[in-house]
Length: 173
Image 1: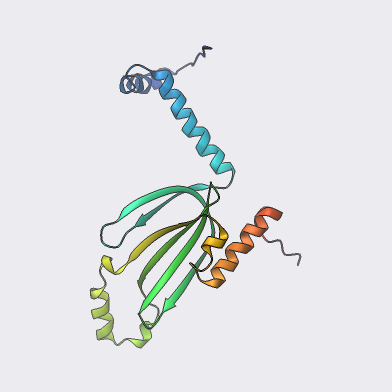
Image 2: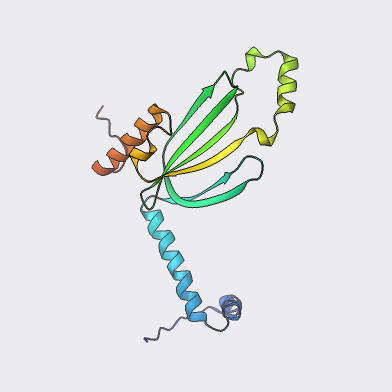
């Protein structure tokens, strides 16, 4: 096994000693694991991806994290239910499509409410009125039908443009 020499500044010695203690004496394996994570993160960033963290759930919420890039976002309203649904469609490093959905009360038609109904509606809106979901689809075909048609078309355009150039539509105007 080849040897490598690492020069450590005096100011950094305490962190190296702490890492060696936590690693049970095997600092080499710890450094290699840290370098693997660093390389993975930097390769993802250079490919246009970033770490995305989303909360998921209705009453009890958890956080999920993945590497992705935002392709498109959209908003729909369901006035009959008094709800609005926000969509964010990401492409993951493995080529899948992650759809982050936030559904909650639709506050857009505030003119239709009297002052009294506004106050009662405001206080009646608790965190459980919001639902956060993360749905994963393996392909564009799988994604179709799970997001509004206009949003699906926008995602298709971005994916198509990625294969042609840099993902940005160039307008020759």
